[in-house]
Length: 189
Image 1 (cartoon, rainbow, N blue to C red):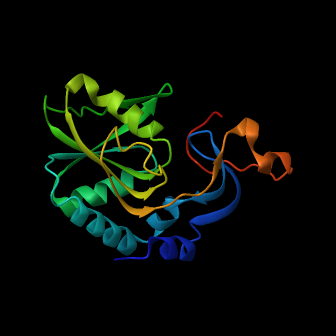
Image 2 (spheres, helix red, strand yellow; image 1 turned 135 degrees about the vertical axis):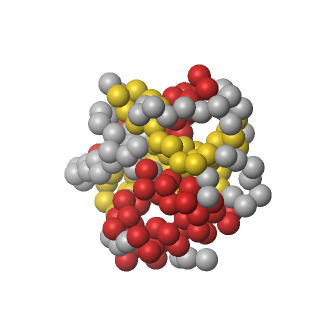
Image 3 (tube, rainbow, N blue to C red; image 1 turned 90 degrees about the horizontal axis):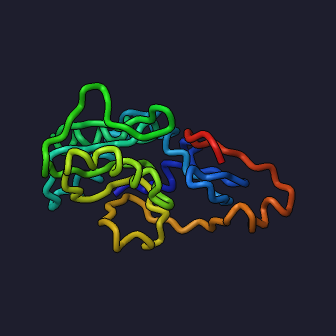
């Protein structure tokens, strides 16, 4: 089993400071999994480890949200020998595009890089709901949910982490005047 935290540190993908997460929350810790994507051998190894966790899950297709999870979703699909799709934003709304389709009842695992509030997971579900798939689970590199979404879906992760997060209006890092950095891919907030 890989030490995910150590790999992220070596790849400069575990950052400390004052960050605006994709969720809009603020944190002193940011997981930049895209830094891992510079090293295909590491991505392959992590995807293989995650595919082992998914061994008992019955599913047909991986769906990953663009942009952050496209590479990892592809590699997990490769390791599990499943079909790979991705959803992407058009006019600010996550959509299944490029002629992709899903059969009614098709069993899906959504693959993400980091999950904090699961906003992107919910947007991914919304993007494919018209096809009436079955969501068999959610898989990720880093799970920051602290178990808060266990009633919504099963999360398979390589690392569970509980960095402190703050609502923007009640952020001590803001109050201390520490510069806010937004390294994620979503605009806004």
